[in-house]
Image (cartoon, rainbow, N blue to C red; front, side):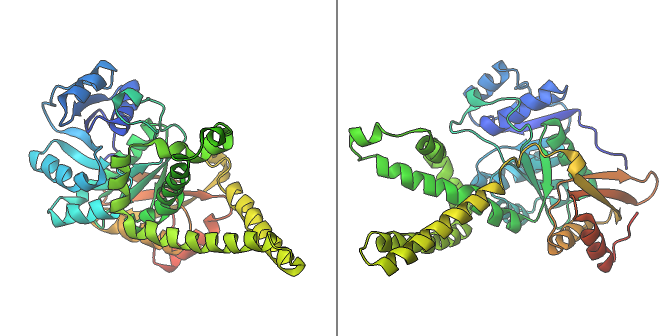
Length: 365
């Protein structure tokens, strides 16, 4: 089995994400076909140079399902029943629910891998699309229990062609992560922005860049975000509950500072100061996250069979080792039912990952 080389793709859903992916692929010479339930947005995407509305005459290399999370399973099932592609992925911002629905609908999950590029804009629609939207951004890939290596390779090629950085993880782990870094922050931004709705004009006129940065994402389409939050409601609710506990501590600390009792003032000052300092430390962890240079990575190389479930087993063992996959590449051994998987991890993590994988029976190369 030879490594994937993408020549053609079908983008189903020509909004911001789908059209941006199509523009990126077209810029790199891929033949892109466009499809949407709204003929108007397809015409717009086509006019922007994202591809053609003409249906493909034969199965394309990859179908990219770019629809809201509640629709992914059904659209995937219909596309597979039609036989439009050899491999399938999606770009929805939650992964576990679409994966479960795909399984329930009887989709061929060996030829499907979930995907989520961590990029976007406050406005939706094809007119906001950009070919460079994904440049340097993280793109999560969430294999099913039986995703085959050729499907993974094709998805990795999509990520590379879009200029993004792949991170492979389980669907449930992805949803917990995006609840922390995306979904709960969106709710918080909306709550802060909501306080401005009935504020006095004089007060709002004092708003500066800090408030604009904090509330920027609250501009996004409320209907789309209700779909996203509904598909990941439990994880988001858990985080907001924890945040509520932190807010209660902050309120108590500030009330103490406002008193005339010196002991309470000292205690409140320490509580609020500690929270601010911990906030600085947390913010430092995401500074410069995008565009990490490859030379900061180390590589662990293991042999992997082509039988169903091997990729899922490997990713589960990597996740159990507590190591993030920054990039990976598969080399297929010609004429043999096996391949070589090169796993890139952050500097200093290769030794521990290698040991953990050997303990689980993986052969190093």
